[in-house]
Structure formats: C-alpha cells, structure tokens
Amino acid sequence: MSNTANLGIAYLEAAQSQKHVTMNDALDLLDALVQLAVKTHNLVTPPATPQEGDRHIVGAGAGGGWSGQDGNVAVWQAGAWRFHTPRAGWRAFIETDTALSLHDGAGWSDIWRKTGFTVAQAPFGAATDFHILEEEHTLAQAATSDTTIVIPARAIVHGVTVRVSEAVTGATSFDCGIAGETSKYGGSLGISLGSSNIGVTGPTAFYSDTAIRLSANGADFTGGKVRVAIHYMHLSAAD
Image (cartoon, rainbow, N blue to C red; front, side, top):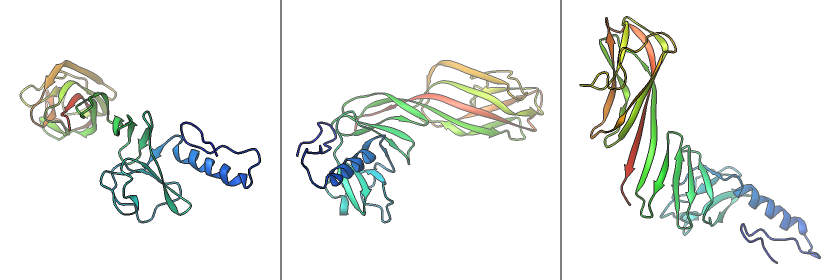
C-alpha cells in the first residue's frame, strides 16, 4: 500500500477491502496534525488522565509510555498514544505557554509568544527577542508610585507607553520614568481618562530589574489607574 509523501497517509487501493479502516485512519491523522495545537511541549511523563485528541510535544528525556519519543508529537486517540515525527517547517501552538513553535528539522524552538516574539535565532540557540510587559497600575496615594512590572535585568528598552484608564486625582499632571530619571519616558502628562503618551528613547540597556516610576506634579496622587507598557529587546546566549 502506498502513502502520501508528506504526512504518510495511506492511499485507498482500487480493490481494497475494509476501505473504511484506511479512510478512518487517514482522518485521525489529519485531525491530529492539521492546525497543530499542543497542550505542552516539555512533559517527560504522559499525563495520567488524557482526553481524546489531546496532543503534546514530548519533552527531552521522556520515560514511561513516551520513552524514546523525544520531540515527537504524541496524540491520545482511541485509548492509546500515537506518535508522529515532525518535519522541517511544522508549526505548533503551545497552549500552556501561549507560544508558537517551529521545527527546523532538528528540533523545536519558539518563534512567537503572546508577550513577545523571536526575530532571529542562531543554530546553537542564541536569540534576539522583542517583548512587551504591561500592567494596569493603581496609583499609590503618595508623591510617587512604582509599577509591579519591572524592566528585566539586561533588557534593552526602546520605550514605555502609558494610558490613563481611570482619571488621575490629586496631581495636576504626572511624569513617567524611573528612579533618578523621573521623566525619562514623559513629563507633565495628562490626568484625564484616555490621556496617553508614547515615551520613545534611544535603546537603553538596564543591568538590574527596574520599576517604572510615576511621579505626581502639583500634589500627591489620591487615586487613578494608568496602563503602563514596557517595550524592550532581550538577548539570549547559545545553549
């Protein structure tokens, strides 16, 4: 019996009996691999109670029922695990990480995440990524208010954006920056609902985790919320 070149789906033969068996197997294969979205990509032990159709990319060093299947796509169908060997160009959405992973013929690597994406990755794993960290920050009733999110150590920041999501009270305006440079990403910003600012700077490297500081002008903050987003680049060394 001959098979298709890429997914290895068995062709129906002219005089074949039990054709529905071959046809149903082909449908199972298509259901498993088309629009591929997997639950996880780093498990090394099969989940105890899989649901019909669950898919995983098997993690390195897997054991038990997944032994020897590292990097393959495991699919729970009809009460058993079926395994599929990926080819170069396969893409999989990783549900637990909200990420998109690409197989290059040797292994999987993330090319996009909800909070960032990889723009370049070298053969040994060195990579350049762009990211956004965002929070809706409730202003402290004080002269300054630091965000919970921080610029990560060794990040290269391109800018910080803000939008007032609940009118700021107490202050007549506010600055956006960091400790020691309180208006680095914008000064005398508006306090009314919907006011926004795109604080662009030349790429700036940070060597320790650094909070964004919002500083009140005219009087202390007494209320309000601001959506703050840090736009930055991150470099990863080779594996």
